[in-house]
Image (tube, rainbow, N blue to C red; front, side, top):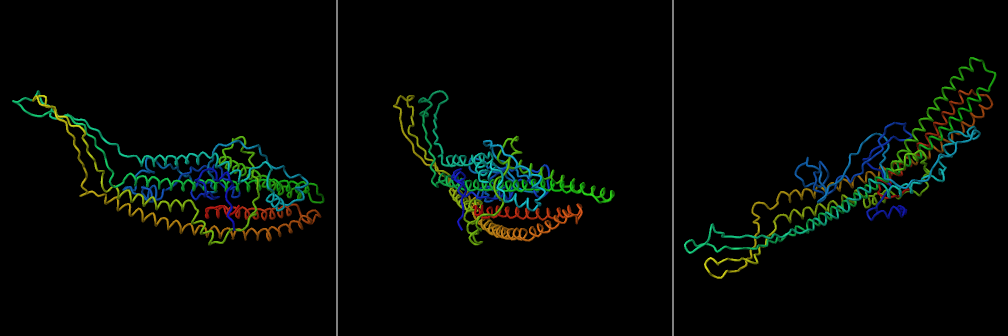
Amino acid sequence: MVVRPFPQAVRNLAPLVLGLTLGWNLQPAQAQAPDSGRQSGGVLLEFPNFGPIPGSPEPSLGPGPGALEPSMLAPESGIIGGRRRSGRIPRTKGNQVTPAAALAQPPAMRLPAALPEHEAATRSAADAVSSLIEDQGPADGLTLDAAIQRMLEANLDVLALKYEIPQADADILTAGLRTNPLIYFDEQFIPYGTFSNARPGGPTQYDINITYPIDVTHKRQARVRVARSAKSVLEAQFQDVIRRQIGNLCRAFVDLQSARIGYLTAAASVREQERVVAAARRRAGRAEKDAEETGERLSIALDKARGSLNDARDTLADAQEAVAVLLSSPPEETSRLQPRGTLRDTGPPPPPLDELTRVALEHRPDVVAARRGIGRAQAELGLQRANRLDDVFLFYDPLTYQDNSYSKLKSARSWVVAVTMPLPIYNRNQGNIARAHGNLHQTQVELAALERRVVSEVRLAEREYRNSKDALERVEKTTLANARKVLQRNTRDFQAGKITPDDYLGHLSDEAEAAGSFRDALIRHRRSMIDLNTAVGLRVLP
């Protein structure tokens, strides 16, 4: 099985995006799914963030794992000289969608033409659903790959987080700066009045002192290693942010496809029921009372179908709004956003479970970040060990001038050299070294726990992929096929006058329910493909 990479434009976003995947955020904001009933006011926005930084000096029960700060309630701290940006992630029920950036306005898009009246009279809901599922969508519609490319190029949230990388470079520069030397001027033995033979003293002395700190334990190099390790972790977390954003877009795109099919199917169902009502009104030979009761029942069923059509229209508008937010399309073009592409699983099957697990452990950005966090924790330990001894100060006095003019002697010049060093008797940074040891072991355990969760996620996603595929095949080959046969027989009976319009509408409702089950099974399988890509960390499925 050959793993297919992302398009070239996606790979060229930055060197950090080499491990991009079609994924799904585990902690995003959410919006209502098109096929689960409409809920107005769903949260459409997510504020992307890097999340906890593995191996960082932050409280493990607060900002993140690998903490070296003593207080669990300490404010969030980031890499050296900077801060870690994060945002609140609202939670609601439903699907997960994230904001995107401004981009060039796409060409105008429009819904496909409505089914003609004669076509509605001969096509069932199942036939309409099957035809729409096989349909690629409008020619000027937006494909998934094009949507991903646009989002990566212009998503302002991702671009804002990208500035963390040059800030990490600045932190490396800051960590590598040396301590400035000191220069000191002084005048000693200044008399209150003047020195004399009767009151000898001095002579008055003038000094120029230079003090140069010497880093004998290489603390500067240790700080640079910590800063570089922090940047390495940050790069992996940036990849994970992009993976989650792509996953959010994929889910919103599938919801838009589902909403489009639901809306066109509901429109076809309304037209079919209108045709049945019109045919019932033309029939004769029925008592006036019975005709009135039948007409009332048909009108109620037709009103329900029209209400479902309105709900489907609102669901489609919600799905279009979600994608428009992701792509930052202008509000006036939101209603014209239409997807292009099939919901069918047209690619080859994924690799075996063992191979998927191996790939996930190697390529998932969050696992890579946690693995790099161990290196950062080791660098933190090295820094704390280097801090056991303060700098040694080299003292150099190139000129000491002694003024002997008061005794009518020649003035003297001399120089001084000295060394000042701390005595590590009490404080050898024992506590911070012990904390760094604990931090290293904690980060290693957290990596093992994350790897175990990743293995479980891959197993669950692969199982759901197989189960959803089996369910789709069963619904399509059995439920949908039988519903078509029954409806064809009932249609002939209705045209021959053997069943009443009321009964025929009931059969239409049963067949529409079977068509809805087929659509739901197809959407479930398409989402399972996205979830499998998320769990693996690479785009193993289209």
